[in-house]
Amino acid sequence: MRIVSLLPSSTEILFGIGAGADVVGVTFECDYPAEARDRRIVSTSSMPEGMGPREIDGFVAAALSRGEDLYRLSADALRELNPDVLVTQDLCAVCAVDVSVVEDALKYLGCRADVVTMDPHNLSEVFDSVLVLGSQTNRVEAARELVASMNSRVEAVRLAVAASAHPRVLVLEWTDPPFAPGHWIPEMVEIAGGVPMLGTAGEKSYRVTWEQVEAAEPDVVVCAPCGFDLEGSVSLSERVRDRFPGIPVWAVDANASFARPGPRLVDGIEALAGILNPGLVPARDDLAQELRKSYRSRGRNREKLQRSEKIP
Image 1 (cartoon, rainbow, N blue to C red):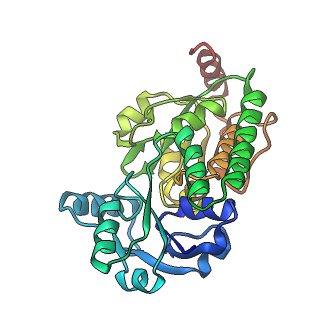
Image 2 (image 1 turned 90 degrees about the horizontal axis):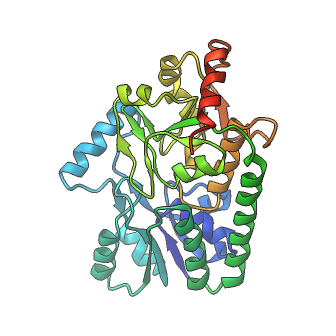
Image 3 (image 1 turned 90 degrees about the vertical axis):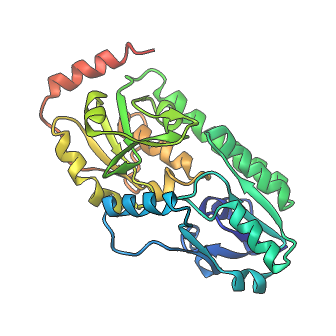
């Protein structure tokens, strides 16, 4: 079987269930596991390099308003690879090549690959996507084992934080301008022992104002700018830190464990739990970094934590 994956998350799933040897083509963003980098790149970004967060937001918004694609799909690579299965998405035009573009390309090339569309909006659907790819690649048992392992780790976190305080947590999926979280991230916060502020589970992320952000009165702010690793997240989050001098502000590796709907979302849950419940859940220093140790307003934070415990 020859598989082309146009999603970093699907690439991770395919390798996770033992189908990595069948993956022949990936996107320029498919960087995990490291072996995926050896595959031929069939999709690249149309976005110029070196832009800041506000410039990126402006470029994306302008491109989408004009109906332009943010990704370039190589027809030559698809023709030469001649895949049996092609995995794409219909979730977010900012995340990867849209399924309609893929289908048009395959029709033009006369390629008869089975197109598998991933469209998860919450954690349950992310877990289901593992089973879908397991069935598609004849690795059903391996997929079941991976999902069972993911579920086991999630339940371990739930149990560890069950009796803890429940701080008000604001996750930002973009920092300039700020975006409230959506899809699976509010669920991740709840599992980790927090109360998600702004954003709705299963829905898209959306732009908010700094007035809305501050009015949410979070106890903890977590910056998870989509598309950035931990180092990049730290850099983009400095101004957010300056807006909240009295509470902890954290940067996390959004690329690895927050933005991509794959197995490493469980790592993100563990990282959040370590942030919100130090001592109860081991810290994930590989995924999260506090931008400034907060020693001011301890009494205020303690009162807010006590108040948050009363939130149902």
